[in-house]
Structure formats: C-alpha cells, structure tokens
Image (cartoon, rainbow, N blue to C red):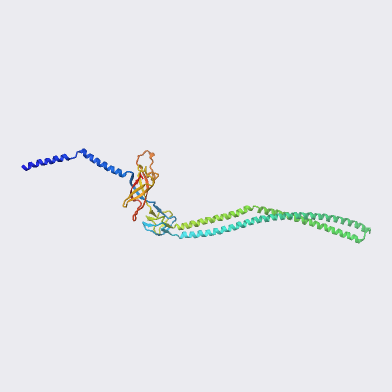
Length: 404
C-alpha cells in the first residue's frame, strides 16, 4: 500500500512535465507554414530564369516512301526497321518496260535528228535555188526584151526592103511596058527588051521575097513578145525569194523543235528507268514496310516510312511561358528511358498548336472559353551519347533558360 502511494505522485509529476512541453497549436501552424514557405522559396530559386514543360516529345522529319513509277516489285532490299544510308536501295520495280521505252525514245531521237539534218540541207538548197531562179528569170527577161528589140528592128528592116523591092518592081514594070511598045516599032533590039523582061521578073521575085521576110520578121517579133510575157511570169513566180527561204527555214526549225521534244522524251524515259529503284533519301531507319516482292505498286503509293537519324525536340510551352524565349537559348531535356541531354532553342512556331490543327477553333461562334494555349518550340539537341538512339515520339521534359 505504501509503494502504490509513492507511485501515484511520481506518475502525476511525469504527466505534468509532458503537459508543460506540448507545443501549442499556433506554434505548430507557424512551423508548418515556415517549412512550406522554405520549400516554396527553394523551388522558386531553383526555377528562376527557367521555363519547363512535360508536354514535349522527340520528333523527326519522317518521310513517306513511295515509288515515282508503277510496276511489279521484284526486290525488297531492306528489312523492317533496318538502318540505311543515303542512296541505299530500298526496293526494285521490274524495269523491262522502262528499258524498252528508253530504246524507243533513243531511236525516235535519231530519226528526228536525221530529219532535222535533211531539213537544214533542203533549206540551203531552197535558198540557193530561189535566189538562182530569180536571177535566171530576170536574166531571161532581159534577154527576151533584147530579142523583141532585135525582132522589131528586123521587121522594120524587112519592111524597108519590101518598099525598096516594090520600087524596083514598079520601075521594072514601067521599063517592060516601054520596051514592048518600042519592040513593036522595032525601036530597040530584042536583046535589050529581053533584058528589061528579065529585070521585071527579078524585081517581082524580089518583092515576093521581101514580103516573105516581112512576114517572117513579124512572126519572130510575136514569138519574142510571147517569150517576154513568159519570162515576166517566171520573174513574178521567182520574186518572193524571202518567202520561199522563210518557208524552208521554218520547216528546218520545226524539225529541230521535234529533236528537242525527242531529247526531252529520252530524258524522261531515263528518269523513269532510274525511278524503278527506290533509294533511301538519307541516313536513317526504314519502318512500316508494306511492299513485298510480286506486289503491284502505283506511282505515289506509300510503301514505307523513313525516319532520319537527325532528331529534334518539339516542346509545347504555355503561351504565358514563351514571352522571353528566343532562338539560341540553352535548353535541358530529359528523355524517358535515356536521361538528360542539352540543346538550344532553334525556333518558335508562328501560331499555337490549336491554330494548326485540322479543325482550328472559331471563337466567333459565341462558345468561347478562354484556355491557355500551347506554342510549339523546336529545340535542337547538341549531341547524343554514343550507343543511344532517339526514337520519334518519345516523351520528353524540356527546360529553357530564358535569362540567357
């Protein structure tokens, strides 16, 4: 009983001591608030001059692979997700038809070149012939004009001769009449009368001959005049020398244009033949292959995707975070599964992500609710550690040092 009485005062003393050291509610609240403020201060100090977002991902200029010509696939030279270098063969299309087209285009080019050479020669001949023909026609016209002048002179001469022969005939006729009268009277000898008769016959023949000469000279004049008309016609026909030459040259130009068209067709045929080989556009990885040997593909048909080795980060910052951002600022990125990498801001998009969406919002509809928009910021990665591969679409946390 005595021991129990001693214990009770002792316990009471301990309870009283604990009650004295129990913190009061205001002090507890102050301690918690201080801890929170200290933590907030630390976070604030660590985040000063930085803007961060976890709405970011690794991106790349992914290209859809497709042939530029159609045909049957004979070879697929790569496997799914295989790394390739620029110019490596991805697939081969049957090129038999395209090789035949090249040969056909080459033959057509040779044919058109031969025709162009022939047209050039014909143009040269036409030019020389036209000029020579005009010169010949003009010379012929000059000659026929001279012939007309000579024929007229001959006509005049023949007519003058006829007049002279007619005068001689008239004189001979008068002498014959006198001789006959005198012969009856035996006033002249028979020999002298015979001489008058002979002179008369000669003068009469001379008149007939002169008349024939006049007729012949006049006929020659008519022929010469007709030759002049003919020569003038040839001159008229030969005179448009420039037109004839222009026509020949135009034909030659047309043939040379056909040569250029045939050359272009041959170039296109060679391009189509080269396009039967689908090559890698750069260094990267080929994924999502859908073409296989024996398949028929058409121009532009997607047969795979090419992911280049060069990657970059697209970080979607809030519009309130990009006020002080500009190209060249240092950035830190943390890629899931890889770790931290360094880079620099390359550019900021000209609009928000919503503005570039398939269906941009139309705030004029009256259903407007203000939502903080995101602006894509492109960040280039300085370097990637050896043995590390970035994959397009990987999640990233990005931080930009906006005070630098």
